[in-house]
Length: 288
Length: 281
Image (cartoon, rainbow over all chains, first blue to last red; front, side):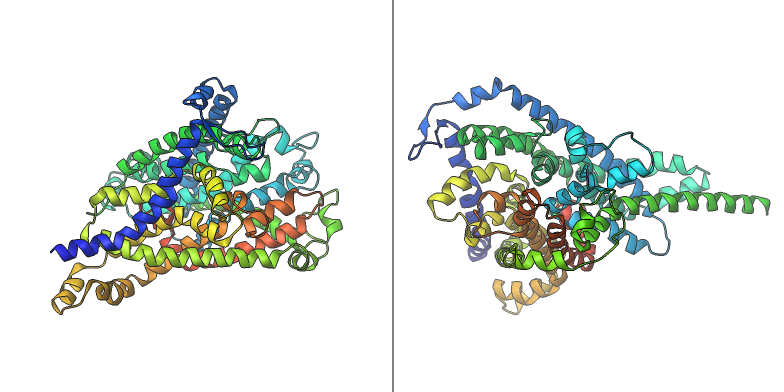
């Protein structure tokens, strides 16, 4: 019995050691950095301890709070559309017809693209002079003059690119959920002569909500962490118009070279994400 | 009779609405790909023409060749391939042992399994700051090794957790009877668990590969041009002074097609993979 225990731990230890040295240790180092001041622009300067100064600074940093608000706008805005669109298309696909499999596979393609490629594709589409979107708008006479998408509506552009890439994920999850639904309540509802709308509202929605909740929590975390699309499309601009917390941390660290302050900010980000992680674990069921 | 025909009429109308909506959805999801692909094969004058050509009047392979000969497309493909393959191999090997232990012996209980997975969800922006300093001190900036280590932070927890759920589905009777025959744990893992979980392991490997292949943040901030994966090459070509829309579309297309093919093969496991095992099929 003792041997069994020893071997079972021996098998997980490599993963534990790797994760401690690649995640816990760097985060502890980052925590140390967040209590220091470090002039990285002058050669040979070392970080020196200053206590909670960086964390205190966050509370007076208006840019941070605006970024926090903008992050919330991105998360909520993208999530609402992604959920409605993904759920809606899943309902449309949830019937037997020819070519259903091919259509589903085609809709899933954006998910497999890197966020940089998604940014590129939409950058090309939104391009004010050479992009097709303004051309189509001109043909349909929808706007009087060309729209400079990435300057006039930077946050919206980023959100649209994300909706394109990730609403299929909600679609996929919903489809899996719909397939797992029991058929008895539907048969009973049919017998009682319920309308399609009533079936959707009183049977499908309540049954599918838990699964949709998991998808929403996962998407929220990814939206908070979004970086590549913003970098490709707007670089947080114009000004700070499309800057989220993640992007602000990047700027503080690698553009203003204030790594200690960026580290302090990253712990706020970690706290927010950890909140979602705990929520995720509460929602899922694990075989034991 | 009359009721049936009325019903059929109504059905016809719904089908029509549903089909039209699906066509709209297909337009939204697919036309962006069309634009990237058509840009890759357009002649430069047609890319930067006004009014915009929605359909390419002429086709060329110029950009496709140019991005490989002039802009380091081949080296980027190789860098991406080397890094993603090694990360995937490490994750599957190390992850399989851990997953076996977690699935069969409940090592560390639910908490250890959760802790391992939670690492997958932490924001990479929080690690990249200490990595930048530490990697600099250890000479890992701009190396394959450095990026491989960085990618383990998200792929290893993912692989361990997903493999655990695949191994869990294999009935325990098989290992028990092997145990009675005197098989060791390692024999059981390699002779019973791994062969039976074959498709699941392959799907996990594919997803680990795709995550590494597509990763941008670490690759962008922990390299200086000596190692340049495709996601780093793309913004370089896109943001420069010259308009290289054709070249950047071409390399994006080349990088994307293998991922899409892989995923079409393994789409059955996509739900489990992308939902981190929360939704099973």
